[in-house]
Amino acid sequence: MNRACLLCKCALLGAASMTYLMIAGCQQPAVVDNAERTSVDTYRRPEPVPVFAPTLSPRRYSAAFCDVSIQVNGMIDEPAWIAAKWSDDFADIEGATRETPSQRTRVKMLWDEKYLYIAADLAESDLWATLTKHDEIVFQDNDFEVFIDPDGDTREYYEIEVNAIGTIFDLYLPVPYRAGAKANHNWTAEGMRVAIHLDGTLNDSRDTDKGWQVEMAIPWTTFAPVAPANGGATFQRASRPPGIGDSWRINFSRVQWTLEKRGDSYAKVMGKPEDNWTWTPQWTIDMHIPQWWGFVTFVGPIEQKKENSK
Image (cartoon, rainbow, N blue to C red; front, top):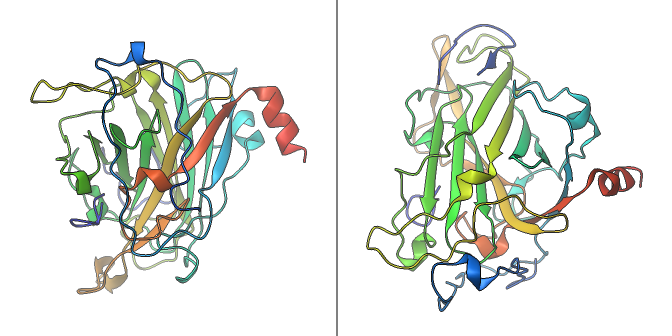
C-alpha cells in the first residue's frame, strides 16, 4: 500500500467462527550471482527520505524448515505451527514515539522446498470487511499485508494484501513509488493458497469478536522475474527456494480503520485516518522503503528447535 501517494473470495457472512478457503541504512542484501540476472547490475538503489531517522535496527525472524505438509485451512493448529515461534508484536508504523497498537498482531513463518508459509494472528473486536473482488483496493478495508524483496536490493518486490473475507490484492513493483514506479496490478501470486479463520461474526455490530487468522502458502515460483513493459533489464534473483542460512527482506503491515456502528453492521468514521501497524517500523507512513524491512533467515528444523529451547 503506497502511503507516500495514498500510503503504500468468497463471502460467508454472519456465522460465528468461520473459516474461508534500526539503524538508518542498515542493509544486508542477499548475495546474488550475476549469472542469475538478465543484465549487469548497474542500478543505484533508491535511498529513503525519512521523516525522522530509525532508532532501532530492523527486526529479525528465523523461519524453520518444515518437513511435513501443511494443510492451509486458517486454523494454525498443526504441530509444525505450534512449534514455530511467534514474531514480536506489531508496532505503529512510525515507531515507539507513537501509541502502542490497541489490538495485538503477530506472525509465524515456516518454509519447505515448494512454499513460504505465513500465519498471522490479528486480535479484533469488530470483524469487518466489504470488498469481494480480486485486486480491489483491499486496504480500504481492514487488512493484513505482506511485502517481500527476495534479494534485498530494494527493487523488484512483491505485495500481497488480504481482508477478513479472503479477498486478495496482489501487485508487483519494479522500484519503490518514490523512484517513479507504477505498480503492476496485473501481477498475480500464481499458485498461492490463502485461508481465513474468523473468531466471531463478520459485519455484525451486535456482539464483540475476538479476532481473525490468516494462513498463506506462497510458492517460490511466484517470485519469478517480471519483464519490464518497456523491454528493459530485470535485476531480480531467479525464482527458487532459499538455502539454509539465506536472509530475505520482508515486512508485514496491518491497516486498521476506526469504525462506528451503523445499524447491525459498521461504517468507517468519516475523516478519521487509518492506523498502520507493522512488524518492523518504517519510521514514516510509507511501507515502500525496503531498506527498513525486517530480515527473515531460513533455518533448518534443528536450528529452530534449539532457538525455541532458549
